[in-house]
Image (cartoon, rainbow, N blue to C red; front, side, top):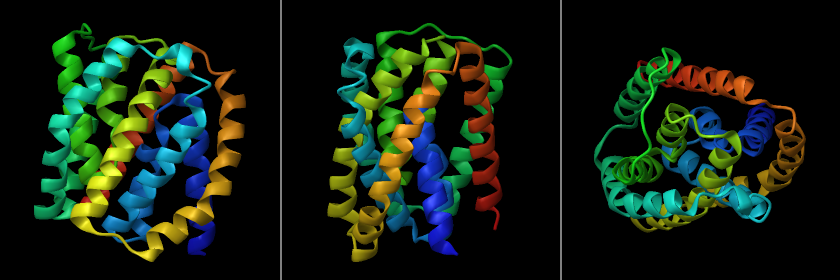
Length: 238
């Protein structure tokens, strides 16, 4: 039964990642935590997310905003060590609780038409937060998604820039996780078994992307964030 659940999680999250540019870690990580230990769930997510970014980067290169990407990377370099420190010293339930509150609060601000201007300083800050979330729980997506939604960024730019950023952040975060938290065979065997499912999800997600307009894309974004925030909140209370 766990294998079926694992396959379903990976397939759905891969479709979401390909069609929106952000969905794999946001959807997969909370459910992988039900099947694996925190370290295993985070590292499986990092490996599969890295594979997705590698597979898609050549197709979305034209949509990348390289100025924003550069500032995200610089900011994330500062945030990465803070994330692994939190992972090492804090209980995973406390991390999930704090992140769920942040996601829910910011999502409600977006639903009620909260908007912000995109600035270089905010690019650096968002990159830093994303970096810390990647090494702590393997989820860089929420701050990027909330930021891009708040600045009314087009879905193509959102997808392209986030995927390019993920290519850097997932690789570095995986190396930091393995170095400071260790790894095991379960992580690599499970990741290897999931690769064919990931590529099936990539194919289906590319088809879906063509049919998502900007309005539906925004509503879909809010629904995913609310679901993730509520789910993490409930999980942290168990």
